[in-house]
Image (cartoon, rainbow, N blue to C red; front, side, top):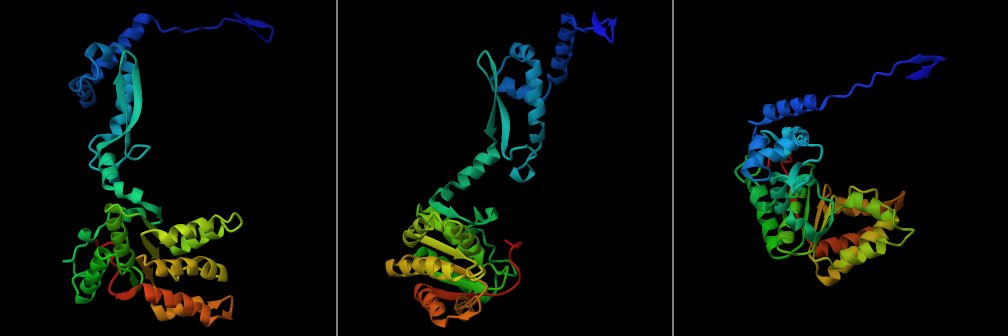
Length: 311
């Protein structure tokens, strides 16, 4: 009984009888018994029928959690909240639920082991696994003599640890070839860095006050293989030109470290890009940048249609 506004009211506490709970548990057990998940638990000797029966509500929760994996053919189809992970049951007298990688995620991790050698990685994730071998040279956009010549030069430059300056319009395949090169070097165990130059300059500028950018410069001077992607697309300033880019290029030139560049500019228009800062015409400062680029790398032009969706 409980008081309510001065009146007494009867409280109705409903308790499910034990036999009713047992009937519900038995019905649930029977409803899931002939399902792939239960067969898996039995086939792998993870649980016995009696153990499944004794823990049927938790097992049912597991069956619901792995239901999105049914019929999955790869990570691109993954419907789990955490892509590539699913719940696994372990029974040692007590039922445990652990989140583990699925086989597709494990396969991807194996294919991406080389990424550990890329100490700064600003590649698009879609490029993490590309290689020169994944390029379809029979595709109409790739089989022309111009592209084949650049492709051959890129492969040879990578094999010989030589530098390369790739330029051309958007989507012509510059970044793709550069990603193939950095992945190839990383798979051989070489320490590498891949910089998206507009992104990197913004990130380094945020480190000016702390001075941390100086550590990045030292790293990038001596890293065995470096890609500077999309150079010329950044908003050039005196600082990122003279205090960031110049010492990196100067150091790599003096130490003979292979460096790849990609750009929408050819070397002449890139020279103009580095010569004009805040309406100031500084041709000498632009030229000292480009002198090092020209000394470091041979240039190749990529032309043709957008290849981004063709490989």
